[in-house]
Image: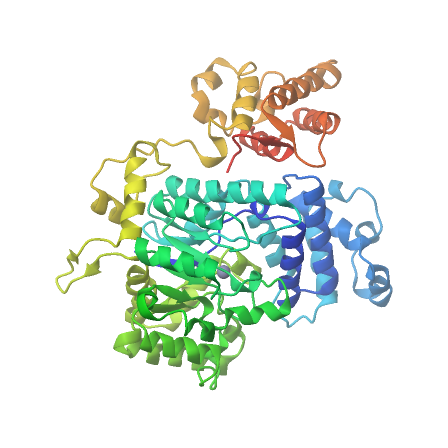
Length: 576
Ligand SMILES: [Zn+2]
């Protein structure tokens, strides 16, 4: 069993706001994504805010290219690069969304390679598109699955929530944050023992303390995540109250700690400075388990002066040596890959540090997926570290260290586990045990060993929960048009049924378009209207028009229709 202590599985829709869009665009620009493309992505996200949608790859590419054409400076760019650019049809033509996927892909490829130096390994267009596609999945469990599928069946991820608070859009902000909490909790129940959630605290959120306490005490969340560069200082009275709670409830804290990543304003980056913690980690708080993520940045390990006195890396290293429970992680350490000298230095330094008894459990493996997807897949990142480290050292960062940080029982010399799990882990085990009869898959071996209850894996998939209005609405309607055998398959089998497999679907029927499909769209929208309100940008006519098209085309599966309805409406019971 290996543990990645640093991943994000929240979906874009649970964090999206004007403020989040701005902060994300900033991050893309910092990672070297060409400016025109950053602007186009910003516009795509803005449009999704105006009218939430589900986009497949073709739709996403068409939108991205369409927006690119609207960006100021694009015409000028076209004139300057005429000889290197794709077919007129993409640059000037209409109906981009009708073009084949391959055409759209190669157009984006040609456009963006004309924008950026070809040897710049960062911010390649297809990695960006892949990142957006991952972030745009309908449920948080689906994002988790995408990562878990690239790991061994017993491996686990720590899922760090994120709170990019949007003060100026309080309604959207509240709804998003609630969905993110529910969706993260749902993912832990869907994949017991493989998704270990941390709750995001932002002291600017008025009820942050109560929300956190509820999340922790319920056992769904095992730790606390902080992101100071989103605009708060770590020594405030509000946060001291959080730390005191963490000591009392035996909860670990992980905070963003590098000069990159997200920030609300440039000057807020210094809120992450590990020196700020010298005064905090004293007295009773000295025992607080704190992980300074990113080790202050890849350059702490990858450059000769990276651990010097006064650098963030140097400070973290000193804190790890001096304090009993300070940790760090290696999340998003990728820049050294492109520089052989830096890479050599990186792994030599890492091996030397792991040799030190005191540090051997304090440096943790983390990837930062899905954000890492901007540069590489989760699987590639794992392979990269395994190939460049000894097996014993990799075990230190991916097994022993994470287990110590998360509160797993210590392994004794005989391989037996003593003593009991720490309180934060025990609460999570109790949480899983309480839901033993309704988890989404069979739990990992360690959950089984430490709980000793019988689990039943018969929870409905996160995107097809019967208690969610949109799933129930489309299934109820579709059932009228199922054949006997389709109906016998029951609710679970209905999930992947395609509309065109239903009896209503007969384009040769003269009434097909005008009456049948339109009638279905009206019925379905009517059923949803009873249980929710329209999301911004949607109204009755637009919704019916959209669904009319969906029924006519017949391509979507029932679960995809449910996902679309979930974007069109705000339901009390949404899909998370
Ligand atoms: Zn992160």
